[in-house]
Image (cartoon, rainbow, N blue to C red; front, top):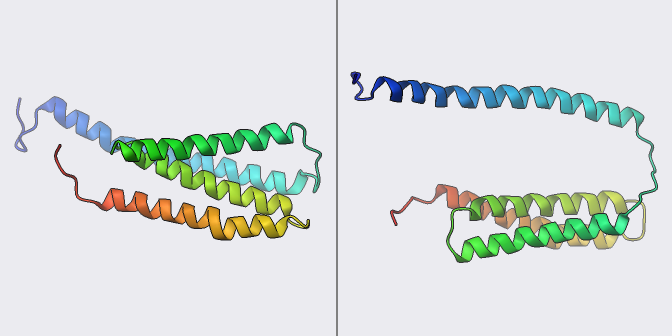
Length: 146
């Protein structure tokens, strides 16, 4: 049966189901946020100020390798003009911001802080900002048919 809007009953049900998904997602995110805030307060109250870390080299080399894969993916998808470039661009930007945060926060109070702060201020954060701007431009660009 076709409704006044020109959609069959199944299409109307499908449209309503898609309208509910964002609400479910928002509810899920709200619950997760409550859990995260609770967990963050608990960590702030209970974590020691210092902790000896095992596998330091593996952690940082692994993180930088992941960042390299994200950058390579962004370059590859950009070169191919594939829509996945949006996800890889934002992933790369987020990883750059995380890298800057951890470098600076872990070097705070040491002589390495100046190198970390300089790299964050003049390399990682500007590149992340540029990538976020590019992603926004991709989202704002009019779509063309292929």
